[in-house]
Length: 383
Image (cartoon, rainbow, N blue to C red; front, side, top):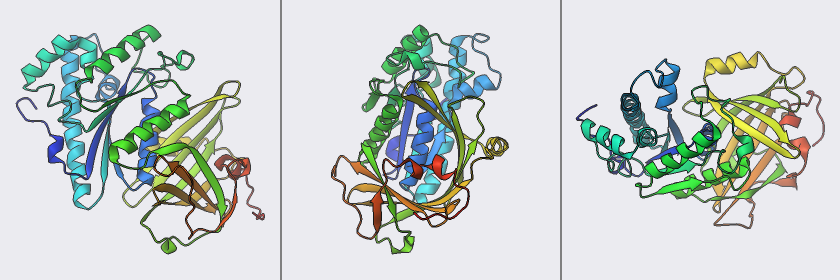
């Protein structure tokens, strides 16, 4: 790696976008990456994720403090660059097949500065033959920083979902500030604070990514409609299709909901694990992460026997600058069809596609949530 030139975004063309998702400890990064992967895939993008090198190396046994910090950060940086370059070589193959590709980096090349300081990191880069500009705005199209929960959402601060982290809330806040500063050299840095609830934070994250990609930015309000089942071939605009299998799991904690989901498209299958829990009266927290097929199969052994497996085909398309998802259910309610409509900043007034026959608005009808559909006992009922 030393002495070689890192990639530059000027070499990627207009069908590959590389974005860093960074932030302080307990900022929602893991859930945010899983959410972005799912939602961008629904919009037809091929999503590739470059995992965080620090967590990978620490999990492999490389313990902070056993090596000098500058050596530790050198290993993280070299692994980060190597891994990203490998992911980008894969992205180019998809690009050459005509796909639009988004590469999401779980942290990036400048994160290490937050741990050893501006001067020491500068010396490290110089010794390796890199400049900050090469590893900042010449390498990534954009950087999105999620503020730690220790700054503005203290009641949600936890390290339970990452065994490689150990920071106190004060340490997390200071590290968050240093990480934010390390990326200020980028020409397109964005920061997402904790001024809303966590779901609102994730919505703003997705909105920022949509803006970076030049797509309509979704408004927070979504509508759900019961529709007549349709043949996707009758849709007069370009659409994507995925197959979704969702199972609910037994939870040891009252008021907690756990589920796993497999989402397959024409190229691959992605697996997700989601936990929803009650934090306080009227407040629920959601954590979502991508998992391996082996983890998915292991979690399926905890399937809730009181709930059916939900299987559906999801058809996604844009109509008049608005995004629509049509779910055609195969189990446990074959024939059921629902459509979710997402308003955008370009078209705040909803305009339904004329080629979809809408039966009624069921936005606030809980019987059409996935959790309630999973309770359905395979007895055909009228909709």
